[in-house]
Image (cartoon, rainbow, N blue to C red; front, side):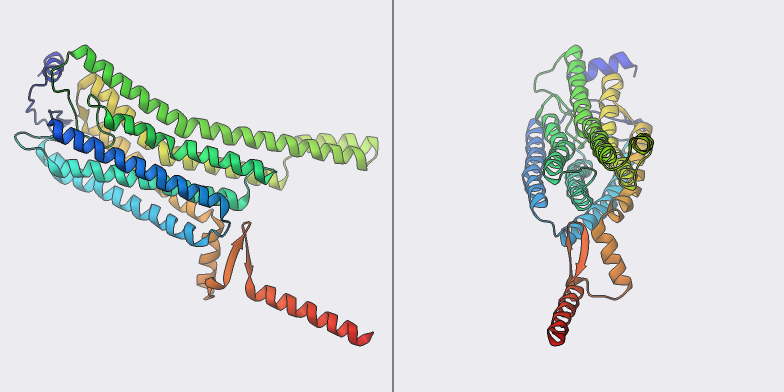
Length: 382
């Protein structure tokens, strides 16, 4: 079957029974299944947007981060394990054995359809879980901004851009009857047959939507973080130069000013490392998903089939990216504190986190008792 005949057959909504192991067959799904699946995926995305946006608001108000950080962090790891199972388990054992036919006639492949729905749900959970955890981390270390009020607003906006808008745009792919359901790998077709040109235009439009998701979800937030880091560093340098000019003589001031301009303080180095980790977390936790969709849509535009090799290359990149989860988790102050206390057999319930620093109730009590004793001894001497 050459490319032209495959192109026209698919455009005319005819049944294809090509079971070539290297390709995923694209066949027609009933309108009822299309509507039900698109509605279900859209409800999942909308529910996730509402629930996790509420969590982000709570993050901005609550500074005691320990319990939420642990639960969300372990949730991310658990979801990644499930995603790995679904990617290499269900797909390899069920779909590949049937020639990668996701909707094989006369009966659709329900296992592969369930795979698409479950992976969509898991990916949304993973997106929002990382949003909460990274927001906790940023609020804990107050990265890398000087003023808390301004930095918190900026952080919330950047987090919403990164983790909520892209899944929201993905609902456009799910609701479109001439598109391919988001992460579900279920091809759809209009009830009436359409020409090949219109089909190509729809695929290109969907590719454009995915590109917008990638730009909003990865490039813009990364650029915002880098811009804020540079702005914060310039402000710190400006204040440092002003203090040097007021407190020292002219000759020494010029020397110190040049030194301040050419060197980075410990705060600046720490902020720069955090910027780099933010970029990695955004790049490796969201980009593979967007890359998968882009490659998939482009493959459909060209072949109207999805090569298995392309599918697994992008999938493996996504799975390898989950190795960065320990970095995201261990960078959080709460995890370091809990692990330290577990190894030292201390009751971590007696501690709480305030502004990124763990304080002990017992230590505060001893300090208060010592102050009272000092005052008592002073009164006795007088």
